[in-house]
Length: 561
Ligand SMILES: Nc1ncnc2c1ncn2[C@@H]1O[C@H](COP(=O)(O)OP(=O)(O)OP(=O)(O)O)[C@@H](O)[C@H]1O
Image (cartoon, rainbow, N blue to C red; front, side, top):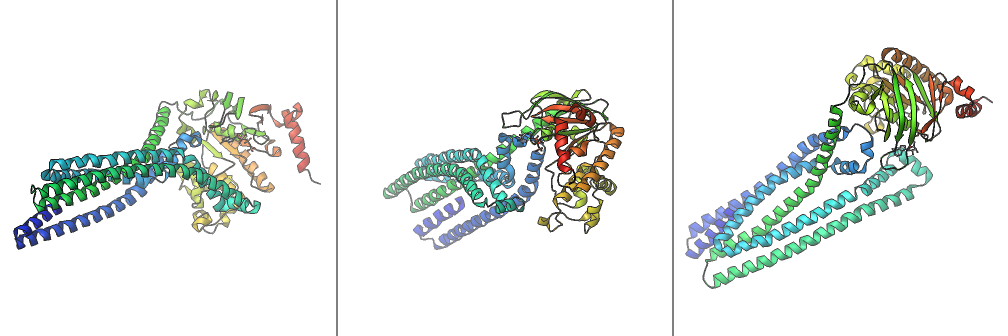
């Protein structure tokens, strides 16, 4: 830009002097520098896109996933302060890199601006005042961008709700029920409301930012017009050559462009700063978690006494009523413990606490006397196996979806086969066209499984660990038929006995069906978040309390004829 302006000045001065050759050479130089500048701009653009794709999409996306997965428990993912940041960084991999690259662009822009001002100063120092007029739009634009970033964080929740409702209506799993129940219209309305709420806040902030921008540019234009008047006045009074006027006008016009470019780049950097902030916040948050784990006690190699819960109270993040309240019980090492109770009595919450996916608000969970809160979470997870009611459907190869239960043995075919056997899933494996290598899930052109078959894969996954200290089965047969249920319970009782002699494993089975847990060593009957009764099947029947009553009702309901 500077070279073009100087070449144009020389061209005009040569024309005025009548030096045709000089004017032609200077004109050609002006054209060449202009072309070079356009080419470099294009190259900059291409390089930016290439880098954003390779670094942003591949590397940063992986890092963001690692940060989110680095959060050990589930409670973080239910806290809005964490979720809001996760929403911001989720698709922000490219933005982070783009932001970093724009910093380089901003520096280049600043150099360009410095040169521009130097050239203007050579014509008249008064023209340097244009810099003040140019700084105003920069400052106002920053304010606008800040308002936009705040609005984006404030409306992140409404935005998430809108996305959730959209997925609910468009994905096959939720779509079925919505179509049959005719709730499509209501879901669309709710989605529109959420969308309106999210967008209204953002639009308001963007309008405000646009207003700031307009004010900034009007002020700059006023300054520019003043500068032009000054130049024309000087030329009229014979204080400068025509070449000077051409140089100053060219430079002043590009000053507007180069400031506009710098403002745009600075705003882009500020926009990315929101993503960078959220990413760094999440990194610091996970690092704090890890630090807390660093001084943790080791997890015992085997259980001798068992797991004891003392006065445990637990409230889900974002709710006010405790789900578990005053829960006391002892799960002896090597035992099979059944947890029964009505819907919502807190059975799943109890096992989630045992798996250290959440921490109690009050009270202690002791593992052979040591507070579970003092044990390293990752180490405790490494010694825990669990199949949950809302099991994952990992649409990868069958062998991998099972092997994930113990990542170190992911490719150990014998271990995977043993887990498949433990979950009574051999028949399923035999039916798969490519055996262990069968791709699961229709979305990836693979085999789709029935609900019961998915549950068996989840059970097999939970059976991968060789020596867990805690083995949790939360409604392991909810999607299975009666013969499969019976076969599975027999296998799991045998497995529990085997694990019990190996590492004193505590096996916890959550079940609605009382008849399936009669052989358990201990049955805990949960009611409203606490243990209402406990004992063996016979003891509880003899006691004639809640268990006996519910068992009687179920036995009658399932009795033939
Ligand atoms: N993530 C969560 N956030 C807030 N509340 C929750 C959450 N999960 C469960 N709850 C609430 O905690 C209570 C106990 O739920 P929990 O799933 O532990 O019961 P449950 O006995 O396992 O029920 P079910 O037999 O239906 O599986 C319920 O009132 C439920 O609404």
